[in-house]
Length: 527
Ligand SMILES: O=C(O)[C@@H](CO)OP(=O)(O)O
Ligand SMILES: [Mn+2]
Ligand SMILES: [Mn+2]
Image: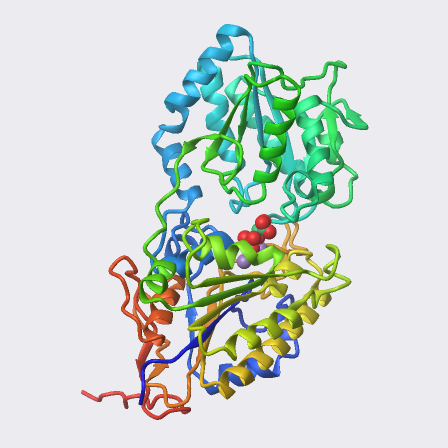
């Protein structure tokens, strides 16, 4: 039997594992293709959250770290972990760049503007990190510290924006520095789908203190509003004062994750430059992938030496395919946050036919993704197709259970199409989730009631191998220490390629006993 086959890595975004239960949209969906695969072939349940991938213990997984470790073949110290370490050690509060900026502002009467997602979802940000920045400002004697809160409702329960604002204001009270001057929903301030008009609303609010709504105190900005993600741009001013960014001020962005805050950062930079405020310095809590020059307080871990390097070294062509929401994930993040165009790599961004009403269009454009995957799989010059089926996560984030059930069914149809084409071309297919989401769409609220929940989970993700005909391999679901980083080395082994020493995660394969049948399990030895 041969151990050298071309294949398809299929990432089902948000595909976590949990037993059937109310709120489990995945087990409720009609998924004949996935059901067949999960019964016919061994399935590993891979840890995809917390320290298994390089996040702080107990933190849910996310697409960035998920795709990064799939590519890196090892856990990576994610930005939130690196920041948390500096918080815990006290280094962040004493960071030389931060202390210098606060000292200079205190001396020249300038202001520090803190801009970030206001929640403890710990996917994009953690409001607890802001406490350290406020103490640094207070320690430097800086009084002009203005807080620009971005409300969440996606990484945490919708309707919890007021609670998280209270936490932020509590940090400011305890530090003796910071007043909230603006509030806006993340779908304005953290849009990454290219809707510059939404970003501009948040930019005008933060940079120029411009908004239709003015409220006397922060809670009034969110109370009675429907949907934390869409809180309108609101100036908070009890005394009629406004606090735009003035020349000489510093703007510090407090999200540790780059992708959704970067469009705002770049627009703020352009607006300040174009309005003669070019001596405003932009800082960020962690490293961003912006066009603008932004000084990070915490630099990111190196994620190179993974799948992309190994494929390039072997001259194996890969085709990367996804809809917009997950396109950077199967390219930039799988490649280790490396923007360089690799030889032997093709990138196919599939347009998402819908606007952003995923509840009305839960199928998104997954049929077109499947068609492109089949097209690439039918090419002999393509060693591996790396594709992301986005629906389970993207529609899961709407919190709409029924829509997510339909989304999961649409993903199943795409899986059936892709696996049929792979079988016809003698390719293997490795299916895996990047973190959980739709398997848990309800959470128990403070008073014991079940509330819709559209965020990520701590659950493991299924990983199942549909072997190539005559393949030498089968997936072993019992590999010690196996976790999401095991996917990259496994893909290389399936391709018959050497696994670089940097990709240290254990592989998931065992010698197949018989092709097409579950490997014969050794009878338990009786002592
Ligand atoms: O949509 C996002 O930005 C996050 C949730 O906030 O999800 P993911 O990590 O799957 O991109
Ligand atoms: Mn994801
Ligand atoms: Mn998500």
